[in-house]
Image (cartoon, rainbow, N blue to C red; front, top):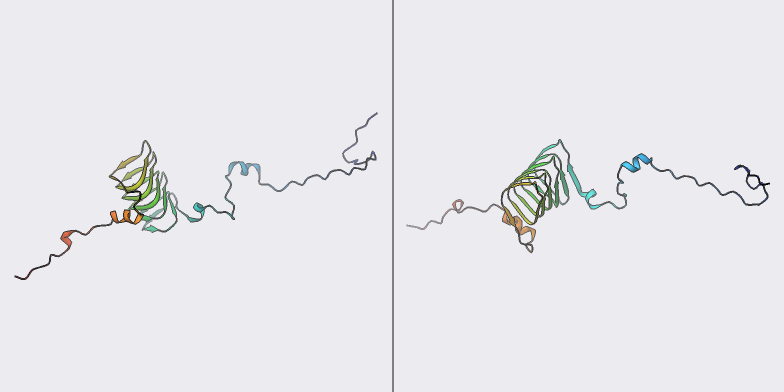
Amino acid sequence: MFTKSKSHDHGSQGLGIPPAPEPTPAPAPSALTAASAPRAPEPSRPTPRSSNLSTLSAGVKYEGNISGAGELQVDGSLKGDVRVSRVVIGEGGSVEGTVHADVLDVRGRVSGAIVAKQVKLYATARVEGDITQEQLAIDQGAWFQGRCNQAKRDTPGAAMLEAHAPKPDKADKPEPKTPA
């Protein structure tokens, strides 16, 4: 009675209905790379971190001062002072010098003074030096040797820097001599 028509025999029973076009698959990245790799941000909307982030990679040793308005990720070894808006010191990273930043995250080592608005010492952190900050968080397991000074929250950053500026000694100033 009823017969099933073959897929290539479209409209043979006189219904006059054309077959639906088959959708063409859009080229897509392989399922393996899409599932395992995180997506990069679109070029039209770069994230603030990606455009201003500088990295000192693991295994790299650098001697000298670093300053700027951007962000710094330290996974290598740095001997010198750092003055940027945000510093992240990775577990394998180390800084030997003064660190000035708005935000500082330490997972590695710091030998020197720290002056920042926000400081976070993670469990793997090892800090030897004084910390001047507005906000401080220390995870259990972090090692810290030094003094901790909380700056006033309404004090601008320049005042925090003045607090750590070297002060002249009275011995350095010559005394005015009076005639005899």
